[in-house]
Length: 195
Image 1 (cartoon, rainbow, N blue to C red):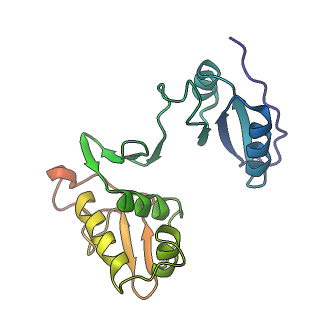
Image 2: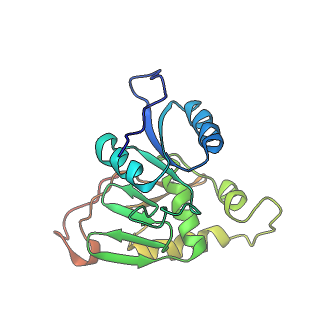
Image 3: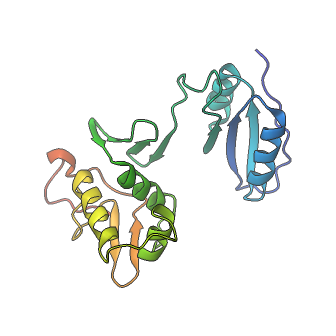
């Protein structure tokens, strides 16, 4: 098995690492060029064996996977891990510990949008535009209703948020660090989640 050579030149000590699994070099070059603008170091893989070697040795922060690639539905299942929470993109599940939550498409999109914002506040208007589109004429509380539904599934009390916090007058933000205390009755009820 040949290990893919890192074709990038590190420009920063704090650059993030990205794996790209795709068998077309031109597409890989385009993705690599795009990611380098965000200070990512990129290692391409043409097949599953190369991707697994890179995952094991290099531990990338991000993986860009061609879902039509013959090897892409192997052990490589797109998931986002945030602390103790894992968000499975394909099966629309959120896992934490032994608990599994199935989300609707809108709930999953909401969770991704908030989680990918790195703790920054996302306004209701930005949520509407990102999920429903700029041409969508929404009811006044459509975002709040879907946030409430997502919180119920995540067992997230808005008064003591563990995952999604309300920022009054501004919108919502994902809490990137949280405690699993209280999940499905676990932990000391006196423990408070981290903000």
